[in-house]
Length: 363
Image (tube, rainbow, N blue to C red; front, side, top):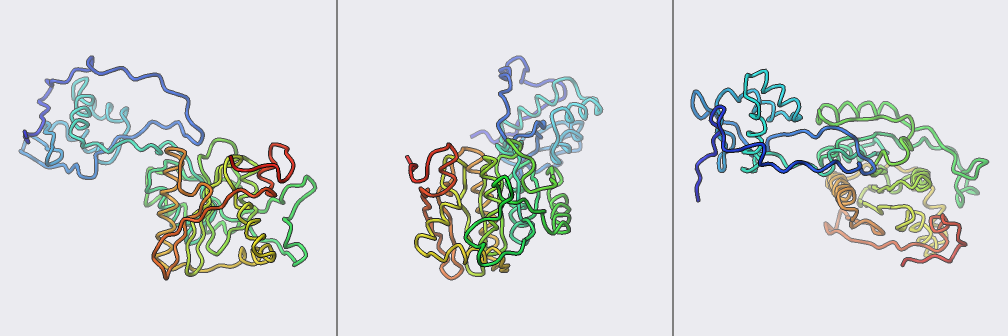
């Protein structure tokens, strides 16, 4: 095997622009995509070494050697830059036309560039700014999502036992919207994300249901307790917005289900299945949504990372383990469980096409 480094010598290289296949016209952006020019960055293992007073070496084996005059461009790649920024840097350094193209080609051949992220142009939303919500937002940013919308879970409204079996509704028949709570938590979370992930675009909509439509590829609803408030998934279902539930009790963490309205079961399907097994579940659920339980550190880390993995799988390919399922980890077991949640014939999510209750089933 030839382990000699590839070299770019001044203005002359073996790489010619005309040999490159022209890029195909850009396809329409998928939902939840932001039109931002992708950045280029050296791979984590692509160390930059001073090979001689006149040369730099990028990488060890394989490696690329460039004249010292390329140092500004290499430095920009180490920090991350767009192709346009690199071209401007090369021009300011007096490098010839085509220098950036040749350098990028050599680095790509040696696998010294960070592969483009499939989700760098995609936007996700995190609803919930508590301990688990904060960890989940950071995990999504680390996973490579380019934009994160932050919102907190709604403030609670008083209820009594007579209202426990039915959701609060206003005159239109929809659940009453409630203001997002704890704005100071959102400020702290946004600030910490900005420090840890300088390239991340952090957005703070005025309400958890904004923006609507295809601006967000997936919403992650996070509760620092046994169950999240059902208002949030109800509204997201009405908006046809895919969403993933994440929650932690003291000794258990649950990721899922991941709900695609009209295509999968939803959290209300699971609630109705639990009600069938225990008629008092709606009353118990109302109390569980009001509990705050500080999760164990191991469960906290597991839930945040697995939420990010499920988001990557769904946004990247449309598939994920938590479609119609939940992933569960008990603190005393240290073994994951995959639990199925089929659609329920009485669930409103099966009536969205106008059919009568009980006429739908999973095909």
